[in-house]
Length: 357
Image (cartoon, rainbow, N blue to C red; front, side, top):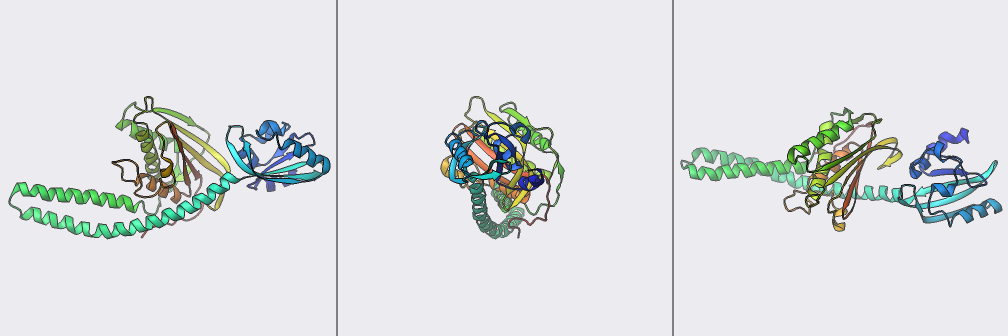
C-alpha cells in the first residue's frame, strides 16, 4: 500500500483497508478527517470500534470476504466517534493480495453542503448587486441634500430654524454611513501574515469594553497553528459581527457563554477549490437560537430579526470571508448556535471584489 499512499491521501473519499478479521490496516487522510483519528491510532483496531452504526454492515463485509463479492450501500447513516451522524455512500471492494477489503466512504453531507453553499452564494451575490445598485442611486442625491442644507443653514437668521438644518445634515450623514455599509468592503489588498489568536483577543477586548464581564468566554485554542494570510482589520470586523450577534442572542440568558474553538482541518474543499489544510473556527453561544425560517437567509443583506438591526453585519461578514477564499455556515437550535468558518492559511490566487463597481 505504501507506493499508493500519496495517491490515496490525495483523494476526497475516505479509504479504509481491512484485513480478513475486519481490523483496520491503513486509512487515508480523508479517512482520518472523517473518523477524527490518526492512522497510528486506527491501525489494527476493529473497524466496528471506530465507526458506530456499522452493526448491519459487518455481516455484509464478512460475506464479501467469503464470497469475494463487492457491494455498495447508498445513503446510510454512520455515527462518528464524536457522535456526529454522517450520511454516506459505502462501498466495499475485495482485495486479493493480501486478502482483505478496501472500503470507500463518501460523505454526502459535505457534498450537499458544497452544493448548498454554491447556490447560496449565487443568490446572495445577485441580491448584493441589486442592493449596491440601489445604494449608488441613493448616495448621489444625498450629497446634494447635505450641501443644500449646509447652505440653507448659513442663510437662516433664526437659530431655532437652524436646528432643522442640523437634523437634516445629521440624518443625511447617518444614511450615507448606512449606504457605505450596504456597499460593503471593496477589494482587499492588504493581505499579510495574521495571528488568528490576536484577532479573537482583539474582538473579545472590543466586546468587553462595551459590556464588561457579562459574557463567560470559553477559549479552546490549538496553539500550534501558523499565521494565515489575511487583511487583519477586515477579519476582525467579520468575526466581531458574528460575536456581537451572539452577545445579542444571550441577552436573556442567566449565564451567557460564548465558546471560541480554533482548529485545523485537512483535505477540505471550499467552493470549487480543495485545500490540503485550512483553518477551522467555531463560534458557539448558548442564546435563544435562530428561527428556522431565518437560517437560509441570515447572510442576505437587509435581513434581520432584531428591531434595531440593519441586517448588514452578517452579510458583510460573508463578503469578507469570501474575499479571503473562506466560507461560513451556521447551525442553530434553542440554547445553541454555532457559526463555522473555514479559511485557507495561504492566499494562492488573485482576488476580485464581490460586486465592486
